[in-house]
Image (tube, rainbow, N blue to C red):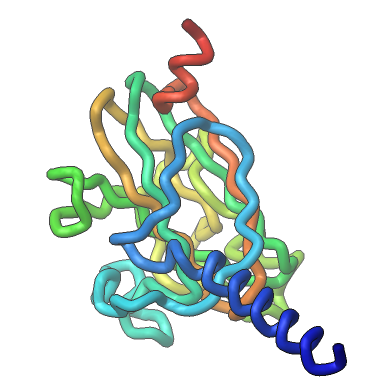
Amino acid sequence: MRIIIPLLLVFLLGKTSLIAQSHADCSTPMEICEKKNYSIAHASGEGNDRTEADLIACFMGSENEGQAEENSTWIQFEIEQSGSLTFTISPHQFDDDIDFVVYRLLDGTCKNKKIVRCNAAGDPSAAAGMSPCLGITGLRDGEKDSSVDAGCNDANDNAWLAPLQVVKGEKYMLLISNVSTEGPGFNLSFGGTAMLPCDKKKTN
């Protein structure tokens, strides 16, 4: 039993790790169908393709020199009813820096994607609780920016971007990266007047 139990633990931990990392590439995203609360327990690594989010404009001033993907999670969704779309990303670890990129999939695939929101804002973890560029982030009403560069150096910089105005039939990909720490995940929730396919079904 002393041998079997450790081996079982290794197997289970390995299985959990594989599940957690199964959405680390654009080609293997977490596909969502409704605007509800999601909890991603673990974010680790950049998957098999480490060039799919390279040389991203708002990340060019970062330590990664344009690489937006670090401890990444890719999330895909389709719009069923046109309207506004907001979301909130809350890191599980208080002082983690969460960055994100929103792509519209022009032909429904990762091969032809257009950046529509890009947020690389951040600060050292020591500034957690004081910096407007750390902590909870996403798209929210009242914001005007579609992109924020790395750091927190410009006037009025914060961790938030403007809502999206989306159209029925459009497909989107959301890349979320924990650029601070390998391991801790995040919570994700959606808002706005737009609907995803399962939201529409619930109203019928």
